[in-house]
Image (cartoon, rainbow, N blue to C red; front, side, top):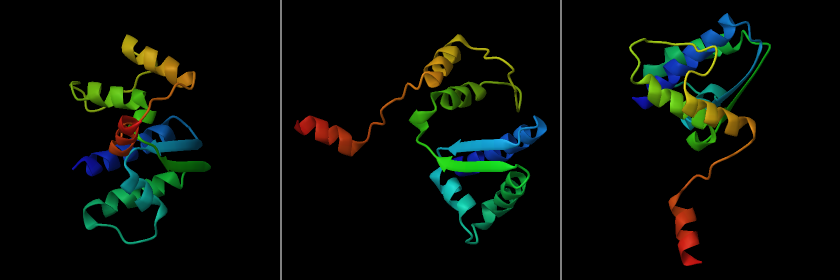
Length: 130
C-alpha cells in the first residue's frame, strides 16, 4: 500500500511542479521500485500501470527531468513533512515558507550539506566486531 501512496505523491508533485512553471526537475524517491519502473520499459503490475503512465506523461512535459533513488535518511525534510501531513485536515497543502521551526533546522542542515548515516545490520555488526 505504501508504494501506491508514493505513486500518488509523485503524480501530485509533478503536477505541482508543472503548475509552478518549473521546466527542469530533479526527483529523488526513497521508493526504489518506482524509480526502477519509471526507467524500465517492462509492462508493470496493473494496479499501478495507470499512475505510471500518468507520471511518464507528466515527466515528458519538462525540458529536463532526472529521477533517482535515495535512502529516506538523505532527505529528513520530506520525512518530517510526510509525518506532519498525517495530522493535517487538508488533502494537500503548499507552503511558500517553512511553517515549522523544526523544519527550518532540517532545511538549514540540508543547505549546508549535512548528512545522516544509515544504520543497517551489516554496518552495526562490523562496528561491534571492532
